[in-house]
View 1 (cartoon, rainbow, N blue to C red):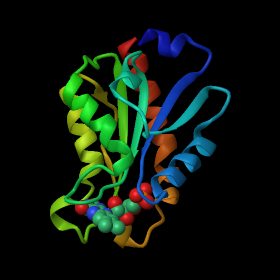
View 2: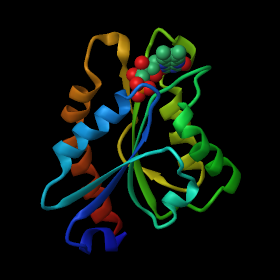
View 3: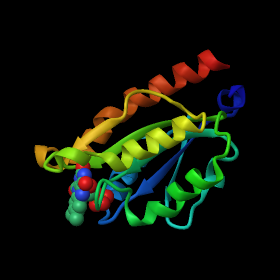
Length: 165
Ligand SMILES: Cc1cc2nc3c(=O)[nH]c(=O)nc-3n(C[C@H](O)[C@H](O)[C@H](O)COP(=O)(O)O)c2cc1C
């Protein structure tokens, strides 16, 4: 973890699980907000990814919507199943979750993001901050909520990584 802080800039990978592009838009806005001299942001759609994306450790933000019966979106399924199947040790990974959902789906609200939170923590990754649950029926734009939340989350990440170093 020390390595994360000693490098010139903090490297953040945003992993995007989306069906209709909202989470991708959120990730792009986050990239614009967070990228600066001290922070390098990489946005990676989950398509084609597997558990090995976490193998080098580091800092991740999972940005995922919810579909079906509270499932992860289609482009996130292979990654989610790979984590469940391979069960790698993710103790070198730190992560946050921005979950997109809709409270009208009472039983499964934001389950896509919550599922990622559960599997990542089960595999030893450490979450920084609370899972942010965005409700599409609340009338707020997810990208605006994300931008309002992100700088505080990143400051918390720096604090936690410093403590762990
Ligand atoms: C067919 C369908 C099923 C959905 N199922 C759920 C669900 O089970 N739980 C939930 O919280 N949101 C659910 N949603 C809401 C989406 O997750 C939400 O609108 C999200 O912002 C979409 O983001 P995306 O464009 O990145 O996929 C569903 C939406 C649709 C269209």
